[in-house]
Length: 248
Image (cartoon, rainbow, N blue to C red; front, side, top):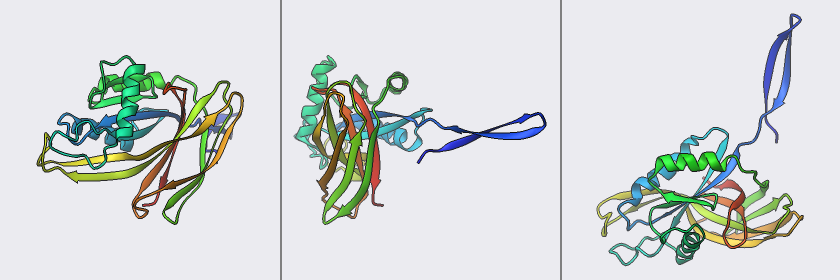
C-alpha cells in the first residue's frame, strides 16, 4: 500500500493540502561474515545489530545478514551457526573483490564493496554509495508457516540482463554462551543469522520473475526473516532486495 505525506500551504487565504507520495527507502543488503570463535567479531556483531535496529541512513533500508563461517571451528569453539556454504560464499567475494583472502569480521555491502566489519567510517561511505544505485523491485507476499515450512510468493520486475535470485531464511535473533576459544566466558548476541541460503531461480533478460517458495524451518516457534535478493551472475552486485519477518 502506498504511503503519503501531506504538504499544506496557505494560498489566497485558503488552506490547501496536496497529497505527495513518499518515496520508498532504497534497500541495501549488508552481509557480515563472522564467527563466534573470532575475538574481533563481537564488536562487528554489535554494529550489525545497531544498523538493523536504528536504520541510521536516511532514505535507505538496511537489510542485514549475519553469515557465520566455519574456518574458526577448530580453534577451540565450534560456532553452532556456522556453515561451510557461507565460507564458500565469502571465498567467492574474496576473489571477486580482490581481497587478500577471507577474513573475519568482513562486511560486504550490496555485493560489491568489502571492508572490515568494525570500520564504521567505511561502512557509512559504502551505504552512501549504495543508495545512489538503481534497484530492482522485489515483492514477498503470502508469507506463512505451515507444517514445518515457510511458504511465500516471490516476484520481481523485469531486468534488461540475466541475474540470479536467492532466498535466505535467517533466525531473527540468537544468543550463545561461549565456553572456550578466543571468546571464552562471553555471552554473544547475533541478529538475522542465516540458517539457509538458496538460489531459487534466475531472472531472464527482459522478463519478470515469479515463484512460490517452500523452505523448511527447524524451529517454527522462533522468529525468522525471509530475505530475497537478486544478484548479478557469478556473485556480482546486488540488484535488489526485500525482507519479511515471520513469527514473534
